[in-house]
Image (tube, rainbow, N blue to C red):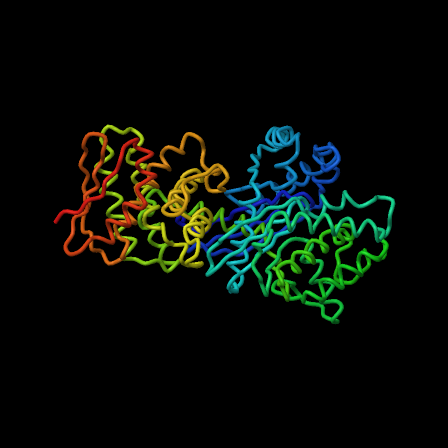
Length: 510
């Protein structure tokens, strides 16, 4: 971190509103919010119909951003980070909006994808709550819904769906107040279909959902008012699934003017509360969730935490090997087996590398990380643990790796066993065409290295290679009977053989 306390400002540019936070950051990275401003600019209004941000919404947003920059300057913020989500990332004229903001305010806006948005929402939830196991964190904004699943504090899946409250509001008839039974039926059917298409039969059963976004604040606020409560903050407030369903139905049956006067519901959310609450109701039903807990800090705090973390990274980053080992420890991996497989994989790599430009120093580092983490999927379960490894690694906070490199490492771990890469695999679609030969080769190495510790007893002490006519011999050195290890490596040698274009023999030598 910097040598003395400093102030940082973050701006969350959403489809419904723009929020700005200024925080003072201490030497240890802890922070306290000293300013929090919100402007309802409705960037996403009309976006569904036209595909573009309306000119008056652009003007309102630029005005709001100008005010937030002035607040940040007056508060002494030395760093300002602005992040835009669904509305800007999907608009056909997003470049125009970004250019105008840069030209008039000198502010560069960072557009994040849905997966990153989910990660940021999860970071805030993890910082504020003891997460249940398994955990579900949802963030519903104006343009999109992010749903994050985690186990043991580690993200296992992130889903981003176009089910934001402003986006869905556009699908309700403007001349119906309140919406007709038919319109609400069509809305629920649309939401159910989207959720079913996304999750299928894979949605875990969750007791408690931690939610952020204006819809969540509205639901817990109305629930608190129904109970005769006037809490100072809604942070951590709970509402049952039955209350969510009842409040959703009640709000939908009201005219907008009456809805705006409902205790606990902000008047500016009177229209978006209806479609937003339908989404939350349907998702909780799908998950079998019994309660919803509000994380009022939400996405903007996730941006703040991520910004502080970025500022805290100095010029001497933690070695990648240590980053991998720390993550492996959090996933309770088998340290000894991981070390044996990693050692074998690196010995095979070093023997193959000469004369192969693809196998450079960075490729060796990526192989080492993948070999260390290849079995972390056991943290979720034995069955299909190679797929679980991919899910854990693709969402892992592996400092020092780019998003491209994380995808490579995750794919290598994914293919350390099981079927070979296929175009239908999500892990394979995440890999750029130019990286696929490298992934095949490195995954082929890890497969054999893993096979050489088939009994997980460390019987193979070292590995060497020997080339012959149309054959590559992988020589396992060790004492005692290595039959299981030879069988394990031979059974998993096809991918490396295909990658190298040669036959592979696995032999033992003392």
